[in-house]
Length: 145
Length: 119
Image 1: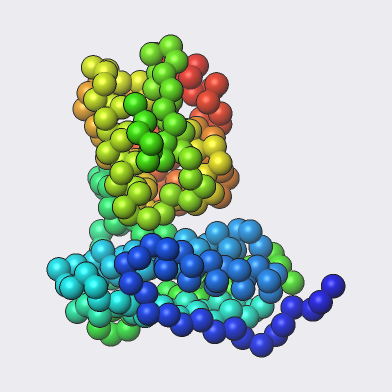
Image 2 (image 1 turned 90 degrees about the horizontal axis):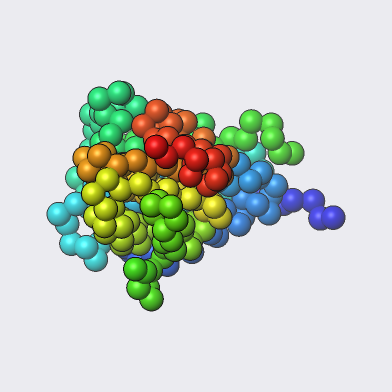
């Protein structure tokens, strides 16, 4: 059986709101993760974070902007970590201003869970100063070689 | 009730409307909105709707899908009805745990158990 490659694989795409395009990009990144040995649970986490970040960027970052605007999605896949980034063309937002969706009084509110899920599944999550670029890092917790 | 473009299978047994998804991934907004509208129509069919949503075969669920489930739950409650969820894959169940939505929804391991829980 071939040893998984150690060299990082890079992915970069300008994504439109076309769901096929988004799923294709996510599928490529998740496929690369599978090939270097990431577990099913890790791949679930990566797909979730990427889909939620792209969805948030279009829904909130590009709210009120030209719907044909694209956003930039990037990924780096290595056996040791996966780095994901999504940058929109909106004015940015303050991630600390989002209400905690797990509080009892917010449980029956239908929105506001995307970012908390990203934070729960990723090892590290950071925003640029403008608040229109999210960078996420996933490091496996010893569940794969 | 399901049109030819429906992403759902809806059956009615013993006064309970049982909804199953045809897709493995419930991720994209347009589909989720359509699914929400369709389930909403099922809820509107009864005065005190009894609804079971089964997630058998569903591998991925986005936060937008969770939002739609919450909206449906609120609607069912407002109409004095009951909502149960069942057959949730362990990884998706973890999403319900992380978001604390296990405290909002009544979740059963399988459809039989959920059916038996309706009063």
